[in-house]
Length: 349
Image (cartoon, rainbow, N blue to C red):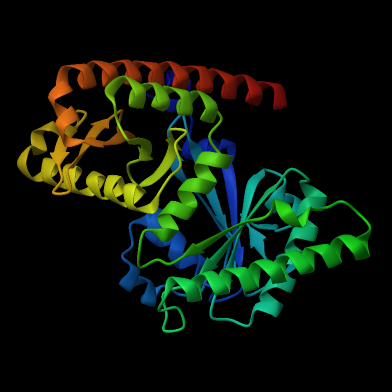
């Protein structure tokens, strides 16, 4: 799906030109571990050996023309003025000017007031540089002994949400500037030991970082309607985060089923048909609950995964036809997006 122009870019050019998530949080909040689990294929248990982040890291995590983005991981152990990146001092402008989303990680087991106050300080700095920056808070590590029930997790989220909104209201009152409306911030409960962190990043990426989001949603709606499906996702294969979904609400159970299908299908395919590893993979899987999953690799980086009732697999010819139409439309969108990105880069140069 990559265009000739994009394939000729160097890695550094792709990284610098990608939409950017800035990942911040206090030291030991777990932000680097979650980034390694979601985008680096590290197992949760291996994160016990991940050292504390000592230097900022910027790396490309998706290179698809439909959803190209990078993660800028900022250490929580020092102020920005004390850090450097690529040999230059790390200024607020360098961090936030090209950032689309600030994901701030708050340790659910830490004292909330200090964490929320620090977040407000970061927001004040970031919004002065980039007023359009989107704000996301991940209430992380909701997998410990303090959170054995869903009610305990939700209580923790409510407490942190109230604290954050109070801090932002104080910030607005003291600064007398409309830097941020406290209602703008989105909150997610996350853990590296289940699908919650993958789903949280999926919502951020699909909502904030995909230029053709509306068009992709309409294409997936058309696919679902034509084939009488229940739900559909367009996944980044490597990370298992979805970059788009249809307009129906997302429930965690459906997301988990579809995300797990990627590992199952691709792993089985690599074992039993390794000679096909360079070709697109497709599969239909019948589940024990009367549902079925259909997976179709769009290219090396993206796959569409759909959930439908098992009896509707009888319409295989119709499903295959519509998946082929969907794949062709995605290629056209990717080409348009690549041209648009090239024109924007030329205007800015």
